[in-house]
Image 1 (cartoon, chains in turn green, cyan):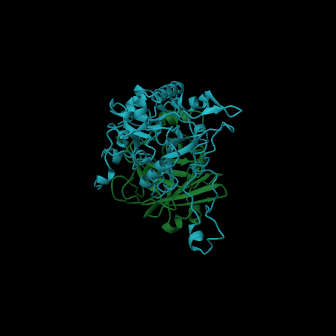
Image 2 (cartoon, each protein chain N blue to C red):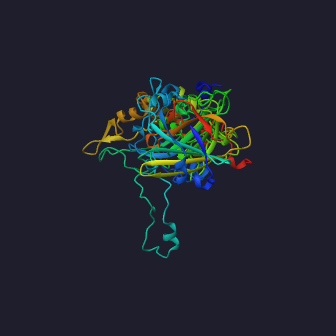
Image 3 (cartoon, chains in turn brown, yellow):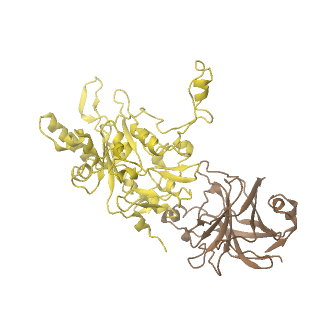
Amino acid sequence: MLAKKLTAEAKTLLDPAASAWDSAPAETIIMGGTPLVQQPSRYIRTAWSDRPIGSVRSLVVRSAHNGKEVFFLLEWRDDTQNTDYAGRDFPDSAGILFPLKGDAPLDTMGSESQPVNAWFWRADSEDGAKSITASGIGTVAESEGSSIAARAQWQDGTWRVVFARPLTVAGNQAVALEAGKSLKVAFAVWEGSSGERAGIKSFSKHWQELTLEG
Amino acid sequence: MAIDKEDLMKSERQVAMVFDLNKCIGCQTCSVACKVLWTREEGMDYQWWCTVNTQPGRGAPKDWEQMGGGYRDGVPVPGIIPTRQECGGGWDFNYDEVFYGGKGRSVFLQPVGEQPTWGPNWDEDQGGGEYPNAFFFYLPRLCNHCTRPVCVEACPRNAMYKRSEDGVVLRDETRCRGYRFCLEACPYKKIYFNYVKKISQHCIFCFPRIEKEVAPACARQCPGRLVFVGYLDDKEGPIHKLVREWEVALPLHPEYGTGPNVFYIPPIGPHRLNEDFSIDETTPRIPIEYLEKLFGPRVSKALDTLKGEMAKTRNGDKSALMDMLIVYHWLELFGPFTRDPAELQWK
């Protein structure tokens, strides 16, 4: 996967419908449900034992940077736009995961010695996403000084969500991003109308290799 | 650093309550005492940690007994999340229009916006049975601070736990992310989602009062002197006597398997009336099958004990149980929690 070097400004690329995105290569990622056995509570494992996990099976990802910020455009089919906690639903959500260190395991959202950093967007937030860290299932914590921007648009049964972050940020809780370098990345999507939240989600089952064009 | 759920559910002691349903008049003072103290913040408008419903009835949230949760044979039972509409309450009313709009004689007070279809006390006083044998009683409900709290079991974040010193089930709101698994798992449906803070919330057994030896607000404010509070293992206290010695205070829906620590003295109710309106002293008006459905198979024995002790006092004999239930001295309701909150300097 390539994060294309573009000259566009942040405010352009933050628009999910911007034509500037046409020049970034699109990658289709096969998604699957998280394994039942890894759900962190006995209640959840019982309650979801006969429910399908992972409604979204395919995700189209584009990535770009402009020398100052890095952008991801995530696009997936979703007939139901869930933006709040109405009834028994949850807001649709999406996340991008990076290892903070070496070979952090993806299935378990990192481990104690190999934590992960994620950018998390939830459809009930007007704009913006959170930067979180995790060192194993059930350990997600919000990072200090989160600086992830996001813009989302739902139209004709498709979510388009742009995530953005400056290439350089302070602190050791955020993944290092540098033009010309490669890193690992993974994706997750939660379908709110299916009661997906927490570890109940679809995810790219393997780390993807992402290169930021030099 | 795996956290063991068993550790989160352990407690050295257990605080508990007993509600004497023979004395409850459904005045909702407990509900309001709680409301005023704890659920006035943003996103809590519809939350009623303590509710009083008429039985038989569909209750609050609507049809909560059909929503699953709890344990069966030690295995968690899947449940559903009660919706905002099923809970009801927290409505906005047209106060401005009625009181300040100059239309006080032509408009009436009513909810604005989406019209409510249910509320915390929607089926008040409907009850069951047919005239002349209609019957009802009131059932106050709050979090049961269960011995095996399935909410704690459910939480993927380990945000919930039992306090080791008194068994109060609490939630670390900084860890809660509003996933609502606890709402699904709780068979009593006494956990509420805060739609502003996007976290879940529930009764905290007034733990800041408990810590200062003050009884919970619902108990202390009850004008009917019917809410006993204390430690389950305090042999001198009312809870142990009513639950363990006399065995007249029973858990609600023991079959839910969570070991609730709020207990109820079942309602005796009046006798049935015959067609000629004479009294049928052999048949209770509240069907025993109905009470067994709520309080389990031990309800008949509890009622027999209560009736037996009542008969003693009618015959002029003393009954320690009746003396305890009459509550001659108000503060005897509250075990070690007898302090007046007005005396305390709250920081």
